[in-house]
Image (cartoon, one colour):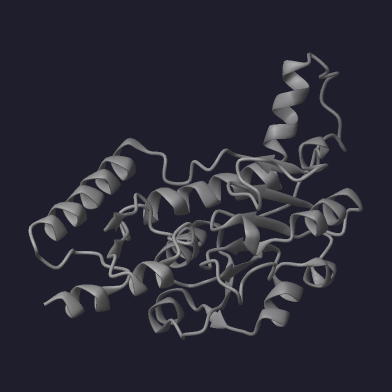
Length: 257
C-alpha cells in the first residue's frame, strides 16, 4: 500500500496503483481549518501589502507616513470567489463573515449548506472570475483543472483582484501569472503552492505584488500530528487485513476480500 501523508494525492499514480492491486490512502479532514487559516493569511497579507512593507522595514527604507504609501485593497463588503466548495473552500467562505463579504462559488456540485448559512451563490467560472474581488483556489488537480487559471482567465479579472492559491500549483499557469502581476492585470497574489515545486517560475520572486509561502498550509502542530496518526492508522489497518479508514481506491480492498 501507499499511505499518503496529505489529503491531495496527485503525487501518486492511483490508476497504476489500482491496476497492481496497491491500496492508496490519504488524510482528509484534519487539515481543513489550518489550510483555511493559511488562505486567509495570504489574502490579508497580499491585500494589505504586508510582506512588501516588511521588506521595506528590514531594508530600513521607510521614510515616514504618506497618504499614498503602500495603498492596498479593501476587504470589508467585497466579493469572495471560491473555486472548489469542498471542506477547505467552505471553511474559507465561513471565515469571510467577519468581513461581511458576498460569496460566489464555482464547483461541480451545489453546496446547499454554504448557500443556506452564508448566502453563497453558485456561478459559472466566467462569472466568478469577472466578478470576484478575491479569488481563493481549493480545487483538486486534474486534467480539467490543470492551468485553469491561464492567461485568458487572468485577463478577465478586475485590476483590483487578489488571487490566492493553497491547493495545487499547476492549477495556475505561473508564466501567465507572472505576466499578469508584472503588467498589473490584477493587484496581487498569495501563493503557498507552486507549479514546479519546490522551484519558482522565473520572474515570480522578483515581483513585489505577490506573497510567497513555502507550502505550509497544513503546518500547525495539531494538523500535522493528526495527519501522522491518520497515515499510520491507514497503514496499520491494511497490514492487519482490514479496510483502511481513508482509502483513495477502495475497489482494491474489495477485490482482495
